[in-house]
Image 1: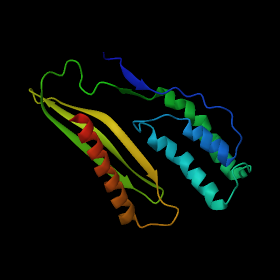
Image 2: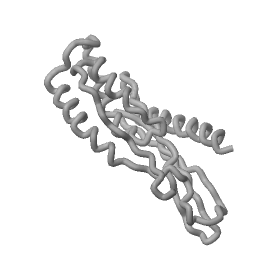
Image 3: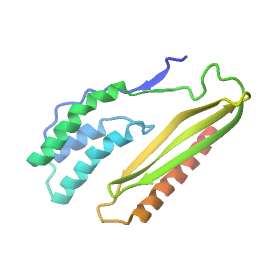
Image 4: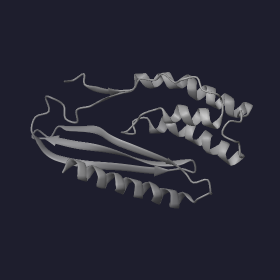
Length: 169
């Protein structure tokens, strides 16, 4: 049971360096728990920048954007080393006395997001924390203030809390 882990298998297909190709590669990464949300944000940001530039879907991207995209693609195979335990409670943990959900939210001019953890305490006072889920969003193309973005991150955390509360009932 200790080796039951969530892992990712990455085999990105060769796609043209266009908005359509970038969207195809980033959309092919299946991450329902948001484990690699921070890794995907730069690719989404690149897409947002290309959209701001007014590039059509099949137009080749510029040299600087192409360099950024190649760097991101070269790091993508490193995601196969990401592994998170699927079991929220270790096998030898004992009786749970207290279980809490903890949510952390943050924002920047680029993106905002939230991550949620389960905090378990057993009868001996031993504490174990487990990753539950994460979510990230790009900041709007229209410039927003940091307090407004922080509020958006907090709203995302509240929605995540509601979803997890429903699932754990």
